[in-house]
Length: 190
View (cartoon, rainbow, N blue to C red):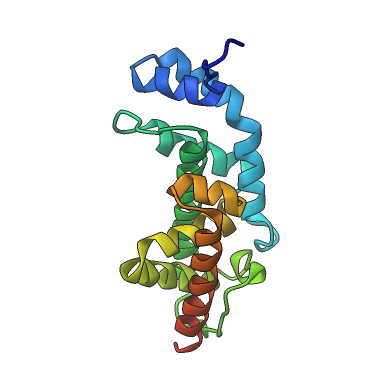
């Protein structure tokens, strides 16, 4: 490589081509990122109740439909793409939990706290409570809510979250600590 020249990573190149209207790039992108999206979906489905009707493949398919459908894509790079995919997967799981909870109206609620177990909770109500808490946190501080979403739901490292949000990983760590305390307080006060 010549000095001063940079190489654009393959996913970012494909995102740029797709943004320019090249639909073949979308097909190439799907093949390139499928395995990582499936790992992300598996991580998000880990701990769900046994017999959950959403599989990692179904979650990836639904998320990719949301990513590819609609407006011209505005993804800046690979990190932005995966952050958006993680957000779509979380929303799909929350929608699924809402639909399931609708059938279980009247069931007793239980207290929840924010930790890995809650994020992988098998109870639909826990996921709904956590989603409500994240929405409330976003109203107070959107970046801190995004940090939680990207780190816990997206499985991103602190450095990756920092890159996605344009802040240093130490800022991400402080945001995460604040968000966990805020969410715990919110969830236990209910």
